[in-house]
Structures are given as structure tokens and as C-alpha cells.
Length: 266
Length: 282
Image (cartoon, rainbow over all chains, first blue to last red; front, side):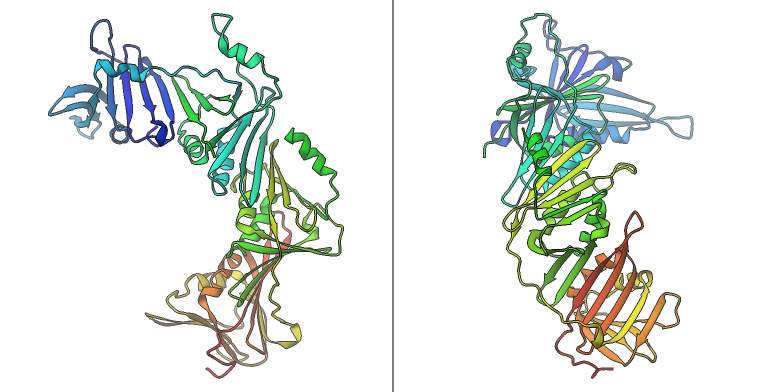
């Protein structure tokens, strides 16, 4: 996560933690929505939010700092994370490190954060699932990563396209060379919503399954996204809205990450 | 749509069609001569010769014999085109160079003749990649006129000892001097850098030297910047032949073993540095 953005927003609710990033359009317009279940990470979890009604906290922080604190506490016995008010609002990490003697050592990290007032919370709503034209499981990320890394040396943009017949194409085109990689026999996720009139279903039903939906994206952003996956997710879904946006959905046991990549015009 | 276009290409009667079961073989050989962006490819019934030149003083040739390909058909007597080697190498390695053992990238190459692009089709574990690389008007290549009858000195040796000597060359020196002689010191490499001169000697009776045929003492200097790229070929090779002719031109031939045990050759020609005439320095 830290590789993808300089700053992000942490949203805490009673059951879940969210890392949110939404870039301005001028910067590329990438949006990330990462969801973690708190029960999986913490033994004890207490929070007091803004009010009873809105029991949530929104914080701005630098993921780099967070990562550094967590790295140093890799072999810790226990970590306590608290939101504290020192000279400025901070996330305080109290790390209990094992030592040879019976006394354990306690290390404290303070990470400065910005508390986001309630009136701005609306900016950080969960992005809507786009009304996509094609939804497909991605090929093995490792393979795709090496392909995209090579293509990165050839061109700045990549054309990503897929259809509902398990085919996906990755293409770069320059004055010198045209390279297209074909992935076949990929699976498609089935989207079921409680209401049978779900927009997604209608959207994909109306299309000819063999028709390709394509997006033209910044190859560096795609490569960055592919190489930032430290843990190999169980499934990665790629949803494409023709000529508008690519939406990646990473599923893990207790983590889900959504990544929105808008198209670039040439 | 594009997938069917790809199948149609199979029946295309191009000038050159070649297949190889491991694209890495090809990329390894080409890496050995990759010191300039563009290369000239000569296709003849014997195979492919890929040439890279720099500064009109150095030329590297990689020979990929027809036997290295599973299938090699050439409809014309010979054909020549220029291609961007950097792009070609990226394409050959599109699936990564450290793919798992057992998974190899199959390659099919096609060239439909003058003006048409070089088509590469690569396949790895069911994933296909099509590449279409623009070809260019071939340049005139240098003819070093290096014939075996003019060869004065010739040494064939295992590459290992030269690898060390070459990687330790003092890069602050402008030139590297080759001394070949039937008498001591037989074969000496010297550099003249900021920190002083260095000499590396290779005695003729060393285990590393397989054949030593020197007829007279010859000293010639070559620009180190021109010889430096040959290190890539040296590192891949198992055996090397060093030859000099009456004019002091240097020819180095490298034998490179492929992963599947086949061998192929890479050759470097270099012209001597002008300041010094053949044999008047000792």
C-alpha cells in the first residue's frame, strides 16, 4: 500500500478499518479503497468515535511512517495502537519487544496524523461499483507483472482489454513496435445482488460476450499496482468500463482492496 | 478478432519463417552483442547473422545457425534488414528472463520481406504474445577483410581466465594493449591508467590455453571503450579464440553453450588504435 501513495486516509469504524486514497484528476485520478476487518488483526479493540450516531474516526496519515513503525515491531510480543493527543494528534504505537532478561522493553512510536472533521467525511465515501462492461479474473499476477514490466520499457501507455469469453489482451503500440499479449481461458466472477435488477447484471448481459471492452491506461500506474502486491491475493478481479475506467478488486482472507484506474487520453 | 488474425499469419508465406522452442537461447546470444540500439540481421540458408557496429571500428556478429531452430525456411537466397535490438530483446523476454524451469517460451519468427515488420510470436504456458517490430533500411556493414591467410597469431583458450583479466581491466586507461609472441611473455594484456600500468600474462603451457600458434611478436593497442562491450560475450562463452592479422586487426571468437547443449558463435572485430604501428613497441 505504501508504495502506491504518499498520503492516505485511515477510517476507523467499530468493525472495520479502511485505507482510502482518492487522487485528484490532475494527478492521474487513481482511487484506492482498502478494507480490513478489525477482528482479524486485533485482540482488543476499543474506539470512541465522533458521536454515538457516527461512531467513526477519519485520519490523514503517511503510510510510509506507519510501515516503518510496523517493520520495527515485527518480532514484538504485542503492539498497542492508540490515538493520542500530544502536541498534535498522533497515532501512538506501544511496542513490547522481547528481551533476554525478564524485563521486556517498551518502544513507542508517534505518528503524526490529521483528524478529519465530520463535515468532510462525505469526501471519503466508498466509491460506487462502476457499471462495468466486462468483469474478469486476472491471469496470474506474476506473469502479468513481467509482461507489463517489459512493456513499460517500450511505451508509456497500455491498452488493456477483455471480453466475457475469458480473453484478455494487453497491448502497447509505438512507432517502433506493437506488442500484444493474449491471455485465454480466464474465469468470470458471477455477480449476485439481492435485487435481481442489479445494474451490473444488466450491463454485462446486454453486451455481446465476445466484444472487447478496452481501457487505455498509464503503464507506470499499472506496473506500480501490480508490483505493490506483497501478499498474493486469492483472487483479483478486473472490471472494465469501456473507455472509462479499470477497476481492480483484490480479495484476501480479511482484506479487500479496490483500485480504480481512469483512462488517459492520447 | 485478433486471435483469428494470428492464426491467419501461420499460413502466411513470408520470406523467412523460423521456430525455436526456447526463446531464451536467442535472447542470450543477442545480449552478447547488445551494445548499440540497432542491429542488422542477415538471413541466409545457413542461419541468421546479427551484426552490431560502433564507431566504424568495432563489429560484433552473432551467428544463430539454422540448426538451432526447430524449423527454418528462407524463401529467398538471402535477406537483410535492420531492427532495433533493444526492442527485440524486450520482446523476446516479455515473459521474464527467469521463468520457472519447465516453462519455456516458444518462439516463432516471421519476416514477409522488404518493408514489412518482423513478427514474433511467443507462447508460454498458454499465454500468447504477438510482437510486430518495424524493420529499417539496412546500413552497409563494415568488411574487416580479415582472412585466415593473413592471421599472424592465434590462441584458443578457455574463457575463464580471460574473464577475470577483462573484468579487472583498468578503465582509466584509454587503451588495452595485446602482446602476442612466440617467446616470453607469450600473451600479455596491458593497460596504462592513472594509477599506473598493469600487465596480465598468460603462459603458453597453462591448462587454460588449448592451442597456441604465434608466429611473430606483435603488439597492438585497442581502445578500451571499444573492447569493453565484448565482455558481455566473454561472460557467456566457454571458449575463446584470439587472432590478430598482419595489420594488427583483432578478431575474437566466442563459443557459447546453449542451455540445451548446442553451441553457437559470437565474433568481435576491432581495428587497432592508430597512433601505434604494428610491432614498433615492445
